[in-house]
Length: 93
Image 1 (tube, rainbow, N blue to C red):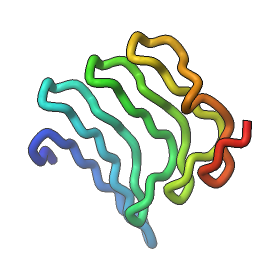
Image 2 (image 1 turned 45 degrees about the horizontal axis):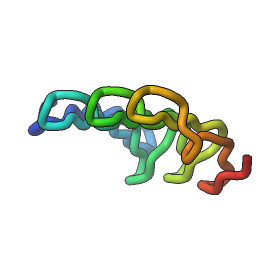
Image 3 (image 1 turned 90 degrees about the vertical axis):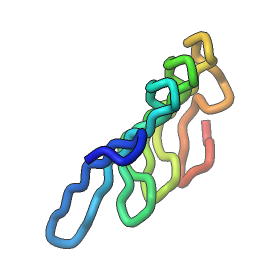
Image 4 (image 1 turned 60 degrees about the horizontal axis):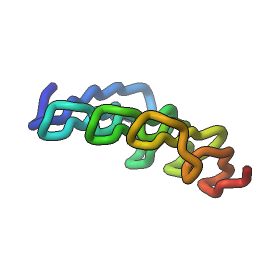
């Protein structure tokens, strides 16, 4: 289903509903893509700069960053502000 510039894909199982979301900017490029479960970010998540380059990628659990994350500068080089290992939303390495 298309709603404005956003694509939605709903998946239902016995006890949960998930929403995979890909939002696009006015220029048609992706802004982010990821999955929501119970209104929280879960699983793999990717954000993009307005020029189409990756901004960050990693994993969420219950709306908090977990595990390895990589952040990128607008020119595509690895940046340091997001890059690291996260536990319960806090950068630990």
